Image 1: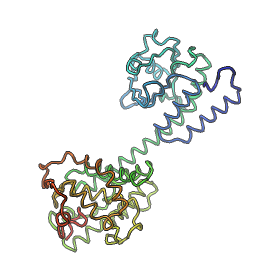
Image 2: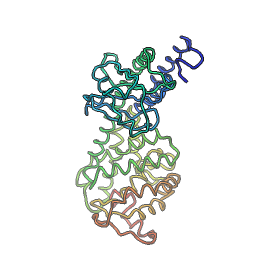
Image 3: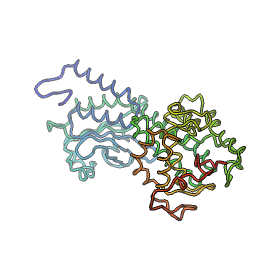
Image 4: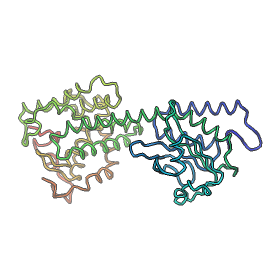
Length: 411
């Protein structure tokens, strides 16, 4: 149903105004760019009653226009990219800032049939308007095609789409800035994490990737929302940030640590907590909990504070399993790599001891997916242990005075 010209009657000016106000209200409170574009495309499709709506945004780095959101047959969530300096309709609108209205798209030499050909859609009429910010800079293009009643787009449609583009321009610019800040924050977090891990890891990026993925899957399996799971995933790389304060002769020692050295090693949790304390960012607040408490144990025998059970923040309980499992599965200068089956058995064995039993039960459910992360490991990896055909024994799982917290070379 066309929100502005319903069959059989005309919308009153008050009804049209209310719909525009609702459109403005919906887009003004959404900061996630993909979600915002989805809302905009959905609302425009409904208001103008069209077969397809596509929102293009400029990419100044690649000099292209791109769209991840397209409403209409065959285009849902398909990425489309066109050159900004091309001769097509979208490119011309973006460069000139002028509206293009085609009653018969196929008769215009500027129209490209490429998208129609791969999506089984025939564009009849098409309307494209520039999307601008408050200073008049073109941010992208709104394109709609094929009114439901078969008529071409008129001046009234042009006015409505331009008005919607004006309302959407500020919201899109704010969402893009928010996304840029969010991406910059995550990049900073990742590079700080690489700095902390780089000195004692054979493959730092692989370790950070693995614990992020495992933590995310585990959080979802524990019943946390996708938003909460994303927060844990993004914060997890910083769990060992306190290692930057440790000397190389402790961190890189290939053999067992003396009791005195181990006490120094344990202090990386305190240093990490100090580095991240007082943060305003939710990601860094979550990372603070992980950094400070990821060596606490469910039975209260961990460090630095000897917290027990649910006294340990859930974020740290989740991260601990991901970190220990990955530490067991990969080679380090002070330990051999374990087969995933033995690492998995160790996690199960430590349920109720080192690990939260609920987290372990959730880990069982995601283990088939987790195991795929390590499919590339082979016996050619330094120190890799051959897979056993039978479940490893308790003695095999925990060699005396070798692994209690696997990645810290206990005395």
